[in-house]
Amino acid sequence: MDENESRKLDKVLSFVLKKRNFYLILIILFALILRIIVASNAYPLADEMNVAVRSINVHNSGTVNSIDESHSFYFLTEIGYKLTNYINLITARAPSIIFGILSILLIYLIVLKLYKDEKISLVSAFLVAISGFQIRYSLAEMDISMAFFVLLSSYAFLSAIYDKKDYMYYLSALFLGLATAIKTFAGIWVLSYFAFGIFYIIKNKEYGKEYLSKKGLKIILICFFIVLISLAPIIIANYLLYKDKGVVDLQIARYLNINKQYYMGLSGIDSPFTFNQLSIGMSAGFETFWKLDPLISILATFGFILTFKKYKEANLFLFFWFIFAFLFISGTAWLETHFVYNTLIFSIFSALFMVKLDSMLLKKSIKFFIPIVLILILVTNLWILSPQLTSKTAVSKMRSYTIDNIEEDSLVIVDQRVFRGRTAFIFNDRYYLEAAYLPQVLNQFGSESVEKVGIKTYFIECATDDCGWGNIKNQPELNQSMENLIKQVQNISSEKIVIYSGGGDEKKGQPYFRVYETAIDLNLAVLKATEQTHMHYFYPVNWKGEIYDKYNVKNSTDEILNEFGFLIFYLTILLEILSPFALIWFFKREN
Image 1 (spheres, rainbow, N blue to C red):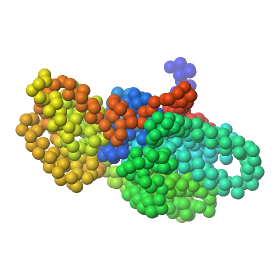
Image 2: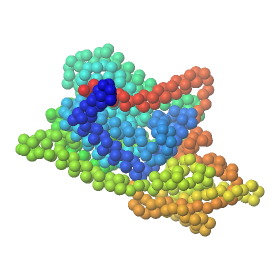
Image 3: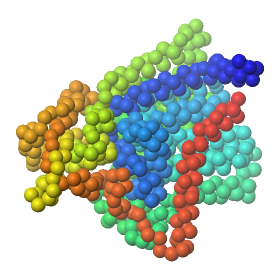
């Protein structure tokens, strides 16, 4: 080993063995292991299938926006698919795992910036690492990834104020813009910044004197322009879509009341925000916190109250960070996963309580309070997550079986009782057909007048009678028709495998899927014809087929506008990919 290599090794060892860095590395590795296990095993939510399926070959869509969000997150997910050459639950959930892990480091930095206390920062980071909410909802959803960019923005915002670095305001706006590119809802944090800014101006007269001026107005206008540019692809796409087809995406239709009838029947389209919904949503949010992070939630309440006097400024910043987003989500079409960012703040308030009580106990020579409580929280959360940690969802098993055992040129017929999103995800790269289309296919491609060959055919039975829809019990006719079809299938096929349930929300160890194999004499054209039926939630699977919101550009001016929107869109994706380097730079600043 030459002298240069020796120096590099010494630097690496010095970095790793530094007490703070050593603890952070252990925290990150532990958090990563837990998230990978749960992401591999956990039962998929319905909305997850929208994201996971829509991300498959999304670059072929020719669009930058879809019914409810920008394609930014879908592109990030597709990159994971392409890099691994694998589409399964863990690759679909990879962005949430990666950005969730990076968020742990950001929590450490933000707490250090606010409280100037290494112990509070490390405890906060560890609590985020073992948060049941954060681990369970590391899904093929946008919320955790969005929260990462909001945290980047928040750290830059705090650095601008406390380090008196005006350029950090612009970085804060840039990262908030990237967050809105992933999920438009992130714009709500502008209110959090304004609320804290007003408080800080009132408290700090010198700051107010400096920024309640042209200088402050200039910063605000530039920041507004940066966020607006980040939203340009969405705005331009909706403008051109409306100009061509008279419709806009679901969110704009919902909040601006533009041609809402196009989406009638979808949840929340008639009530963008109601106070009745607010009370229900708040109750559901706190119920979810209690279900997945009970001890962290309890300690957070005590931590916020008991340390408010000492850390009024820091606690208010975190309160503003939490409250506006929480109220907005509660009053709209909330889902449990939409509240996942709140546990980031709860973890900090919990750490405050633990460190405060620890310092009081140390005066009485009572030691090891923090390690004992952390172990108690860890054991509790591992128990809560034990179904996901100890068993694998049948959806993941069925996807693996498909990849390894179902030939690409075979026909797959899927029980109608399997949720369409799961069918599309599991069999996205196979010629699959929902059972309802079977009579039509047999009539068209199996008649005496067409040339036929024996096509290897697999039939996938939903052994539980409801594989993800949640309402089959209210459709006895559908259930009976599938049972009758299965009896016919059993007479002409052999049972290949029974796939058992698991992953948390399924009854562990129960038959979930049964796979039958046979050969049916059909015209080969049937295989390609199945792709015409591959639709899920407004869009064709693999983006092969008609895309309802793909617009035609009418003139040269609109063409320039369209190209500008695509340019900004691809630039935001590039910046999102490069964002971890900003985190590295932030760490160097703190050192």
